[in-house]
Length: 335
Image 1 (cartoon, rainbow, N blue to C red):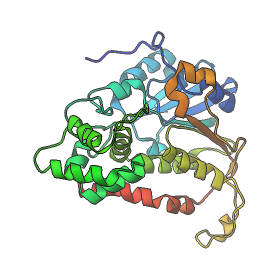
Image 2: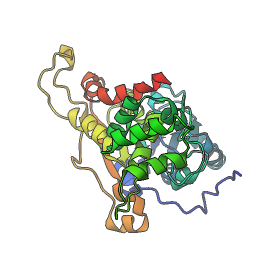
Image 3: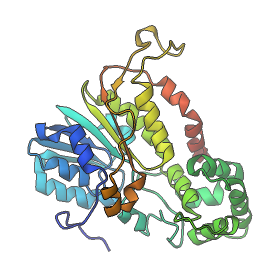
Image 4: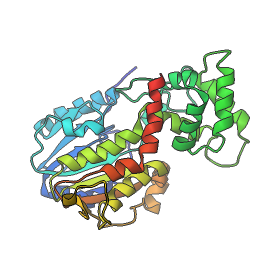
């Protein structure tokens, strides 16, 4: 059963919202792109300031109810497009006075608990993990990809040190039956010892599958590159990450292109040594102790932001740095 969420009454904890507001300064008006609209918490906060416009993006069709609610309330100050944020350069809405582009890479509790999405190891039945606009599901990955491919996915996207044994057992059991969520959890538990940690044995494998199914690495990489392309000089890119792989990508993107670099044979002469961003904060902004007490999942959040200071850039070095991860995502071509 679906229901329209009453956003006026819904209790939700947007991560690092006060820090975000102080960075993007919505008080002075402008256009802001919310690349991960979801429940609309960031958008709602920005729209409290009367002179602002939000362009919201989300690949998840379950956000349509929220988007319709926003459209009725904020009218021509709110626009929504059901696209992946890697396609941000293809949006058809006027970007006049664009001030900031915002990414919140976390998943809401509603999404995690949604049995249709199958993001949780507590789900039952067929594996899914599709967030929208997908070409394949986790069911296909687990039941059809070869062992070596599964090993790479679990190792690099989940940082799972038991990736080889888990992959081997998956391939052995699927000869007998089509594997379900419960089967996968049993396999993982059979390989990994019980521990006293709050982290479930299956967490890393499920993270890896979610990243692979939704192509989250290439989404983030091209989302950042294409955000730079459409953002005017002086505009801000803000990214909130929740795991080390995401943060590594964002950190490199901002830090590498905010420094004077040695000459590179990959770049044309007119782009050598060119800074693209200005960093105000070199270290990530973390949630306060007060926020983590109110909203425990915020503990893993890191906010990084950068101000665009150059009109054009070349991102060959960025793509080369993480091409090994994109190559792993491309293993989906076997399906």
